[in-house]
Image (tube, rainbow over all chains, first blue to last red; front, top):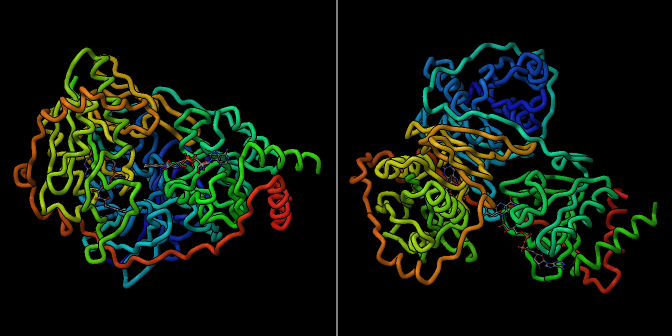
Length: 323
Length: 259
Ligand SMILES: Cc1cc2nc3c(=O)[nH]c(=O)nc-3n(C[C@H](O)[C@H](O)[C@H](O)COP(=O)(O)OP(=O)(O)OC[C@H]3O[C@@H](n4cnc5c(N)ncnc54)[C@H](O)[C@@H]3O)c2cc1C
Ligand SMILES: Cc1cc2nc3c(=O)[nH]c(=O)nc-3n(C[C@H](O)[C@H](O)[C@H](O)COP(=O)(O)OP(=O)(O)OC[C@H]3O[C@@H](n4cnc5c(N)ncnc54)[C@H](O)[C@@H]3O)c2cc1C
């Protein structure tokens, strides 16, 4: 399978393409001669300029979805282009909620397999080889498709840098979804946005995360206070998200955010493989845990074996007294 | 209301996982257990069937060697019956192949609602349920943190980056649930005893009417070319806190110019 044309799913949030889509476009530039994007919603004309800056020449605009979840209609639009012979050799999807839905739908529609949880894409022998971090990032698996394309790849956030190439605005072409009948019957009837202050979790230079070792919901205030003092963002393990102590948007890991800050402070977090995949590539890791054998220490540059209820208040006081 | 729950039976995650050196498949030799991620779907199904005033919860699973121990756990929680697809030819099946098998098995139960987890603990491909929905021509709502049935439709709070969306879909539909959607019950002693005699139908690929070329390693049309150790992080410094641990953290942050 030679790779001449790659399509990247350009997911748009608040009127701009998400960073993961820009990361994928950046990488696609080095893998194929032509990089095009697929987008939906009403902001496509204005994001075409940004996408062009990163090297996209054409945006296939599925248009307004009328409240439908993107999975079915966007996959149907891509499948229609493939059937018409105008499709790509590979489609790259960010590993987001909608990205995963569209990739899964497209796979079954086209009867093509998927490679998911991809963390690297390499040109090899005319095709693409993927890399996947498994077992908490201790091993790296390389894989590739052996059959007919297009190849469907779901790629994790922060696998590549996002770098503009100074391209001209992309031209938008309409790629309306064909009628998919009852399959496309799910509708968004209301949206709820949770308030957040401070830097975004996946963009902050410092992330302070808390886990079950905090003991109770109220202790999460220590994490928030420390994060504020360090001008960082507060994160969490899934254990305390599931327990309802903090909203899901704070979760770091396999099913949460992938973060790569200058410093990641893990407080009362054991270091389960699913947590590690979301933070293991942080530049520096500090762990505070009372169990000297906790797996989190195996990735920590600095490990404090101690009680979060003793170490954190002292740390907070010391930082406050520095002003 | 009839609900099908896709439940995966997996090697105990507490045991260190391994890939077979030859086939590069996950080693699934020992006893398999119910994937924790699917316990939420089972509980959700039981509660929804209950709230709807009746109907059956049927489990669907694909697993090697006629494995039923994970299914028995879910039956002990209260599911009525199970369909297990087990066939030597399934070794090496990918997510799409798995979806074809599950879709064929789900169809037999003619459900109003199909539940699955957003992703499994061991393979976490995360696309299988949506592939099942597409193969069955069903609408789907993924990443549910709350599920309700009203009349002939399902109402879901779907997790988003920013918060959540309220999504409605007519039935039949497929919904994937996150951990935390409900608190799974522990099987009671009575439940465990009852589970032993609940029906488990074991089917082969041929009995499902699937073509052998669509499943197994050949059907996967993807291959693992290499497995390597990841670059290990250099061992860090460990300090046992005796009252001054926080000082070392501050020095470290100063060194990094974060302070
Ligand atoms: C499919 C799947 C996806 C998942 N995705 C994610 C994900 O995205 N993110 C994620 O985080 N997890 C995820 N998990 C869950 C993961 O497996 C762990 O269960 C979770 O990360 C554990 O959270 P924790 O470290 O807070 O809790 P625990 O594992 O319970 O660890 C608590 C730690 O706190 C320490 N401790 C206790 N008291 C103190 C104290 N006073 N002072 C200091 N330390 C103390 C303990 O020694 C222990 O190490 C996923 C699991 C599955 C199956
Ligand atoms: C580390 C690793 C990486 C892999 N990467 C890929 C990949 O990139 N692409 C690919 O095609 N395959 C991949 N596979 C193979 C894939 O895991 C298997 O094909 C598997 O059958 C699909 O399941 P999953 O657990 O990954 O599915 P997921 O999509 O994560 O499963 C989601 C949910 O679907 C239901 N479900 C899934 N499998 C079953 C089952 N057997 N019985 C009942 N319900 C089920 C469960 O509710 C489950 O929680 C990988 C396997 C491993 C071990």
